[in-house]
Length: 460
Image (cartoon, rainbow, N blue to C red; front, side):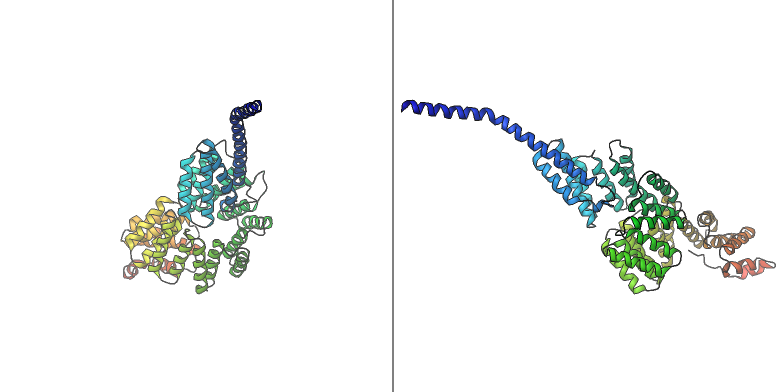
């Protein structure tokens, strides 16, 4: 009996010792297994972010929920190591994409800044940061980040393609249609024309005046993905430009039937309704666009344009300032702010607005015209000459810059230049009665009639 107890104790001691020896091996095995699973989850999460543009045309349409869940698993397993920090950075970036999908730019910005602190070298984090900056209207900073990704040798092809689309958007927003077209055509070469790229190719062609080419690109984009309303919105813009406003309205109604939550469709619909004189419905559509895109300047800019059309200059000033709160670099909103301020009688404010646009975006002809008009109105015809000459070159079909230039020359008693400017006005607008009357007054015996005539107002 004693012998049996001794053997039992011996076996127990042996089992305990064996377990103690095996425990590190088992723990190592479990750790290896967890590491393997964490690496797999990390790869799967990254692949969700790297999904093709055909499957997710916009950053917001990426499966950020699935990516967020996978990166969360990695964080739980990996702790504070390099993999854990990278996973946390990607987790916060995925959450930022979710915020963008809901239009919550402030939350998205906070998430992406946390992601940058975790892993500032992760290019996918940099991409989301650039997208957030672009959505907030900080185009220069966004462009710098996109350019950095383009130069990085480690960037995936899908990420490069996405960056290319956003660089196209920046060029188009800046009004550089030729550079946008060059980039779009280089991206189209050797690849399938998916809807997202086809739409941007059409926008670039439209920006350089190739209406037929733009329409063809938009139609190809729509054929590629009939469920995407973007091509219909762009085709509606072409229809509006060519005078087919009813056709534009029908296309936008189709776009809204595809996606009732699409803020761009509501905004374009509001613009077309404004053209058609349906002002109550237009304001409703613009307000709906603002509800769908609370952080975008477009709805406020359009509301300001409606205010100007209805003679509500004070309300227009407020609308354009709201737009600039959302996008300080929006040259269209700032130019229109200058027009609205001029109509309220605030010439110094209007002058400052136009000067800011000409400094930031020298290719905006309307701003040069506005600057010249303000200087002319503030008894500085000499200072008005340069801006108005520049506006005339930038706006070759607009009769207002040469008309205003003629008025400036007239006040300086430079009759030959004034007559040449009025003739240019009539070339652009043969029925312009003001230019015709001024030109007729310069024929002999013009000097006496000049002094008796009241000064006309320059035109914005």
